[in-house]
Amino acid sequence: MADPWLHVVGIGEDGLNGLTPATRAVVEAAEVIVGGDRHHDLSDAVTAERIAWPSPFDAMIDTLRGLKGRRAVVLVTGDPLWFSVGARIGRAIDPGEIVYHPQLSAFQLAAARMGWSLADVETLTVHGRPVEQMIAFIQPDQRLLVLTTGAETPGKIAGYLASRGYGRSKMTVLAAMGGEREQRFDGTAADWAHEVPAFNTLAVECIADAGAALIPRVPGLADELFQSDGTMTKSEVRAVTVARLMPMRGALLWDIGSGSGSVAIEWMRAARYARAVGIEPRADRRAMAAANALALGAPRLELIDGKAPAALTGLEPPDAVFIGGGLSREVFEAAWSALRPLGRLVANAVTLESEAELIALRSDHGGELVKISVERARPVGRLTGWQPQMTVTQWSLVKR
Image 1 (cartoon, rainbow, N blue to C red):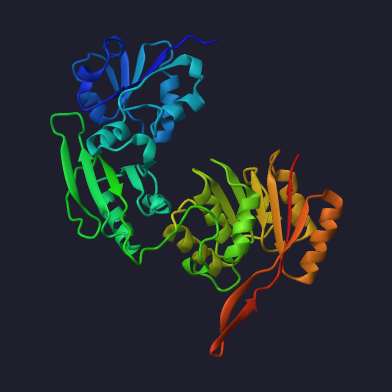
Image 2: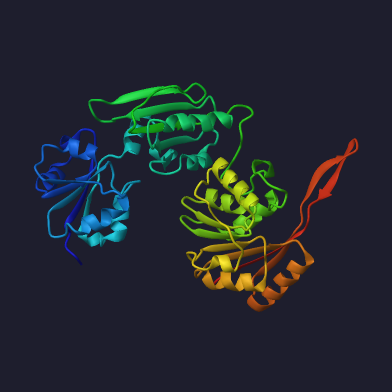
């Protein structure tokens, strides 16, 4: 096992004084320190060569590798392995060559300031990421701690809350926690007007109005929440489909014939960091899918202009595949060969021709074949009757 040469040190607003004696000794003995301007300011008493975060940031790993053989320290904020660069460094450099020195994280400090149990809140980051991804966590009585992107982020989040019927939600911005310049700003989403420091942490207590949108993270969202031209996988069938696809943390879905993106969006909402690629040849449907993804908290949905199987070439192998449109044996074979071991494939059919294809594929590959019939109560004159939707034949299997 390699000897450690790189130290990744978490530092807070109290600078060197907040470090343990052992960690402070590591920083003071450094030959070279890598960090942002703020980190260098917090450790300016140490005499060492200083390197700013490289630009572009992706050059960071090459910069760090070039320091091997020297006493190198990377300074980060708080806990290096909690929504910070420590994990990224550890994926590129042998973890045996790294020593991590955690400091109290912004989440821990914010929870202490709010008097909240950290085990009972959702911890999120939108720092350097699309702010819209926090929308998936807006639910009644939910408490959120959010690492923000800048001074404007709390206002954006206030707008998302208010527009969804959560205007009474309590919001607190905490800045420079643990330092002499610590500040706190309180308000509600509906009347948020504070100007806050760029580097801040946001605490939100979601309070729903009587007409608030109920958008759980389990699949089966109301059809009305999606823009669609009518060809969308409907709510009840979508719930079964996503359940069969089995969303998991960080897993990748190929949504072939994605249409309005409803299945891919529900997949991404159902598990932390789940990813999805939607393959859709029609520009109008890709536009609807992109709008739906932003509105429902899945802004990282990737949309590709093309038709399967040709459009699948060169894509990252998936953990799950949904074939909702353009089903053929050629599409299945291309998707199945790319699917990772233990990957899940689900295909839905509403026409007799597509159903016949599914039956033939099941004969060759096994799996489970089911029919899904849904009827909804609808007015019949002054009375009420059952209106059936198109029956869906669904085939699902796991790659062993």
